[in-house]
Length: 373
Image 1 (cartoon, rainbow, N blue to C red):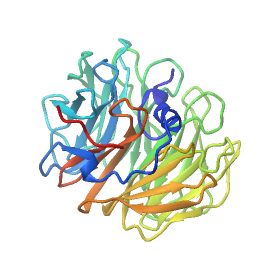
Image 2 (cartoon, rainbow, N blue to C red):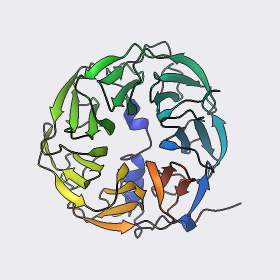
Image 3 (cartoon, one colour):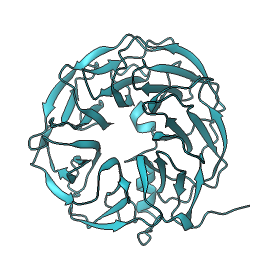
């Protein structure tokens, strides 16, 4: 199983489970959730995965953005509540995302932290969800805004693609000894890159990369040849401000589609196969400045919905199966949402939502009331 398929976020096995338990669309209101990581940390992203090997989904939060703060791993106690936390390492950094993958071939998920103005750092998991510093990767961290973990060259070791707002996007291959090789440029003209997703977009068995770009740049697909060599494809009609992107089959034809979100709203591009895409179609507009996006079957009807995180009110996009979306504002006080992830936090077969806010509490939003023991 490749690294990308092990990540519990966006499209995942949880979406298939949710389809087997149809339910009405939930509001994901604070009444259905619990806050965690209380306080005013500048959270930038959440990543989900089973980091302690107990079979449930845990949460990693990247904090700081442009300022030094501590990152944390929150362990799920089994009912969707991340009540036990460990710092990732013993220092603080300007973190934008934490990506997971097995770097030392011991079967658990290690952490790769991507920072603004600092190089990538590697932390090894001891198998219980505690992370110890291992190494600093040889990389130019200036203006890094995100990244994705994948097995780019098929050797069974995690690799990392880094998105940078200025300068080239980067590829860091796992060195097979627990660290990362020196970074190489993957897109020389990578300016404006802030988000994206790793997925097999052309059905050839290896993992490609979607790159969402802002600052009047065109978003990209990076086609992997299976060895970690990438060919750049521009997505026609996407020049503008797109800060997050996800992959999903939004029209039910069995071909991966692409969704992009930014200041101009949300658009999706229908996949035609062989990395060919139609022009952008409007999914929603006037939702505020959008900074995060996740996709999965949120209402259990078998098609792929989405949720958009904003500097303001977050929004559900409920799909009718053809790629036409009904928007539903999420309840609760407006926040500055930078990170979203979907996963089955409580093991009931329904997708739950984990929200990372900059300057306010982070939340687990369950489909149903949290059980408090």
